[in-house]
Image 1 (cartoon, rainbow, N blue to C red):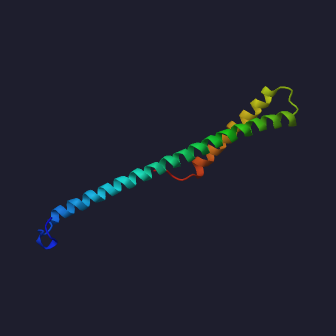
Image 2 (tube, one colour):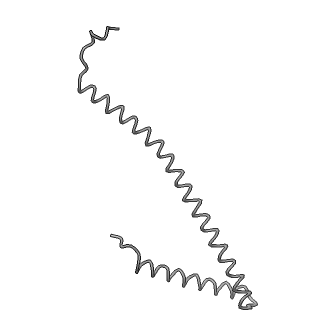
Image 3 (cartoon, rainbow, N blue to C red):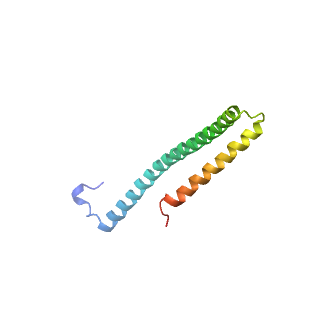
Length: 106
């Protein structure tokens, strides 16, 4: 190997290409690492969605039992009908309020 004082001066274009390649490599590795974090975020959303669905069904079943007991219905089917009708009206009202007062989407 030649001593340091005998090396030719580095070519600026070569130095710039080497820096660009190094930067691209570092950014690629960072992107890979952050991509795995996005998978974790997606799992978090999936768990919350599942939890929301389970609690919604639980609320509906509790509402059916409560309506059947409070209104002294002999048939569970009648209580189911009342609760499903109530849910449809509640969802319709929520959608209407969201359309009227929600943010404008352009």
